[in-house]
Image (cartoon, rainbow, N blue to C red; front, side, top):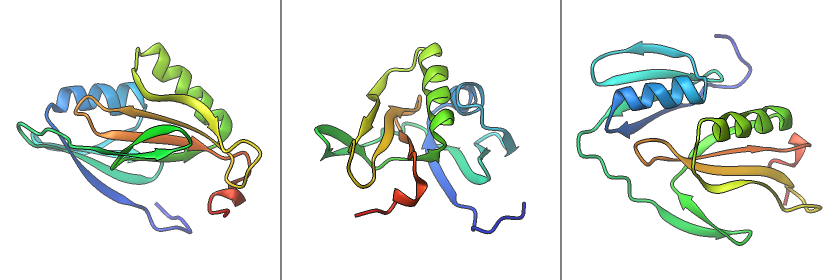
Length: 141
């Protein structure tokens, strides 16, 4: 893989690799890379996310108020093109995903206007997917 930006690596705990495969590979559509009996690598748009089995794992997330919503912390995810965001939201709905925060547009008309949605993977890890109509606004103040 050749890119102008470094690829990000993140390892997260899961309690069931089969459920992780169904969710990350099946629902989210991320290609599976190397794997073993206790972990699976996922190609998350060129970034490496590894699901590691941690028996008895119980995620403990806090919450932070943002735009009138209780945002789960920690969380991770992707910044997608707007059309990709909406396609993913429909794929998640079709899969029966229960959202922590339903897809919606936040900060409308303000710097950093964006689409966002929050959900949990089968192990309870929080994910956020978002999209900016103008990516130059990602770090706007």
